[in-house]
Image (cartoon, rainbow, N blue to C red; front, side):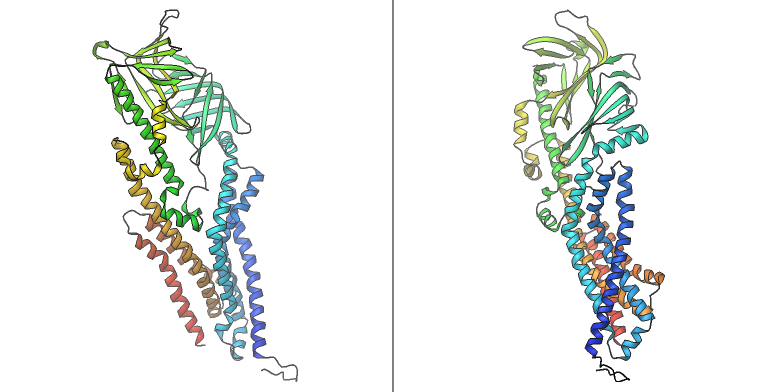
Length: 553
């Protein structure tokens, strides 16, 4: 007990300690709260809000996105704010000689650190809960908010630069008008940059940009209305009723599929079943579609090689009968050629109701199978080149000579599509060699399992370890910050900030380095995990050394 010289009330040692603990706790939480607000707002504005504003998000969506991203930023800024607060409060406590008075009263220095340890424990639990459950959920909501304004993002790109680089095309528009889920372009000029030696130029008074979703990926399709098509090496000018350009996958932006946004349960589940990952599932789905395309190509080559017409490609009731002198397969594309001397040219008969309505012949051509994101199914495109002649079989219309002729959006044979639909993603992952003999598909499947899946599993392990390590580091950093404040009297803002940054920077750098090492194929995973935990080991050693030094005072 401690008596008053004037005979006043006696202050017990326990009461003194409780009073000091309450005082330090109040100052710590106040400083931590103010620091947390400042750090979080600055990081949110510069890291998320400003970039997304430039992408075309409306004010209301920016406000909702701020709410979605706050938990993400809190999980990052909360430990730094707590570290900063403890360094300031304990530094000022030491600088005002209150530490000396406590020591003179017999109060242990380590007892004074108890409020900081409590704060560190709370921050650790909050950080683990935020990073493992709250942040992934809010990120999902934010992703849906961004995708909901994908039309506005594309419109903003057009208005900012008057054109977009679209899937190998440069599309310019004089005016852009936005509707609910589409865009209408006016004064459209497009350049096909796929073939530099034979570029196509397309012009149209109007065009429509439509959007579709496939395997979690947003696709945009530009359809030109009544376009005029010309070529750089030809004088022919062709007019068409409409012309859809190949779909383009929209950039995923700052919120993309990444294990960093998985909650803990999803991380553990994906570690056991990699096909839960949307990227792996998307790639396996692409391979499944390629198997379908490859089987159609094999079917076409087999029939034409036997001297038979191929009549399984259809469109809106029309049947396209294909003949050629020879056919070969290049990947999922069929190359058609005429027989020597032109005895059997490449020929396409358009048949309607059992009657031929149009005949197209040429020296060579291709049949290409591809997935249509706009239609949600695989389709074929026939393209004929060199010496193209288009005419009616009954002679009612004069024959037209063209540099090329093409028709797209042809339905693939139903039996092959149904047969391929029965293949599961697990079948492709485990027994692709039994499903196809295409060397390119088998190579890509092997690369998927040996590279992409292995990298995914390594990244999941690194993410799980880094979350636990970062949570543990919160307690260690706050304790170390308080101890350093007492030792070096870091009550001034600059010195407190310097003392706070060093331990936090070491831990964050080592974690980032560890994640990068885990992603490197040539580096064993154990080295990356060791780097992640090396920062924690260094913090434990630093805490032990500093606390041992203070305990002797």
